[in-house]
Image 1 (cartoon, rainbow, N blue to C red):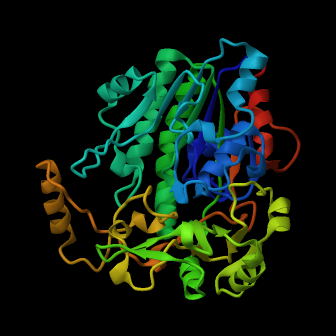
Image 2: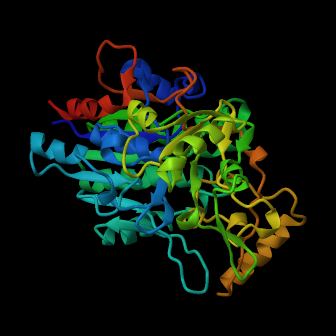
Amino acid sequence: MHRTLVLDIVGLSPRHLGAHTPNLTRLAERGAMRPLTPTWPAVTTSVQSSFVTGAAPSEHGIVANGWYFRDLAEVWLWRQSNHLVEGPRLWRTARERFGADLTVAKMFWWYNMYADVDWAVTPRPVYPSDGRKIPSIRSEPPDLRGWLQGELGRFPLFNFWGPTADLKSSAWIAEATRKVIDRDRPGLVLCYLPHLDYDLQRHGPSGPHAVKAAQEIDQVAGDLVDHARGLGYEVVVLSEYGIEAVDQGVHINRALREAGLLRVDLVDTGWELLDGGQSAAFAVADHQIAHVYVSDPQKVSSVKRLLEGLDGVERVLDAEGKRAAGLDHPRSGELVAIAAPGRWFTYYYWLDDAVAPDFARTVDIHRKPGYDPVELFTDPAIKALKLKIGWTLLKKMAGMRYYMDVIPLDDRLVRGSHGRLPSSREAGPVLLSTRTVGATDHMDMTAVYDLLLATMAD
């Protein structure tokens, strides 16, 4: 059996490979490169789950980065339990084929918690009752956390997501992966490097920012690949999706509210909170797709017609459309909307920013009932922004409650998104391998599962 490193470089596309990415380009030239035909939707947790199950979302159940939990009447995004994934697991099948003693490391790969692997690390902030957010990680075994943070310093959570997200988080993850490889020599290593996700959403998939981001991740990934190769590892580099240019959001929940279908709860603080349990229809927005939950089956057709007439919506899938797209699962909405090229879905449901909930202007991925890429920006309308942030951080350091309300509510800031099927193979996801991958000029994403098993085989 060949030890194998699987490196997920988020947002990498064939068009990024070239003179400014010498390490990844060399890997493609010496081994193999294939554009990937993605499963749909092209979002992180859905695609990662297809990689490790060999199945579409209709089978593994990860229909987006989050969904409406009907029994709780709550929207939850970015859950971590591996028990949410249905179907086989790559590492279980590998153990059946190559021996029960095969060891596995999952380094920041999603649905990390409670996976039956030997080493696992994932972001897990600590939230004291005074309102602070303290960067941390969760690990299996538990002492791995202390060892890694003792070697590398505390995980840079605020460089992993938010306005200050940058290369530091991916560099930390890559170095942590290297240390686990050096110490434990896992038979299979799954590593997630998110760096391209940041500036490509902020500034778009082309131009100087994209080139610089590609150069940076090429160096980090190249160092890890070379190190693993020196220890005898085969390497597969892959991506979940390509990021394409956008310039405007689609306020799908506002349209449903204006039609009298979405309900809010006006709480005592003067904020409006989405009330999914009382809504006739509402959307869980996730990049360029939105699951639309319709409580009354008799209203599905009328809601579909309403959304099909909304500017920025390309298609709306009903039950038949979901079956054709591989998205017919009980967790899916009764309808699934797909944004038009150049557009993406906001989660905004209020009609007046004055009654937006307090978390809307913060980085709060768990309380927002939809994905919010605007969290990558600070509000350009705030005067003396650095002074405001500095004062807030002083309160945090003093152990006082603080409110980091620096995130804008302007969908026009976002310049890159994903979720739709790519406009071309050059703009879509890609796979690079140190080994040959067959004669086809592209590969289905669900075939990656078998390719990884073949890579590990003697």
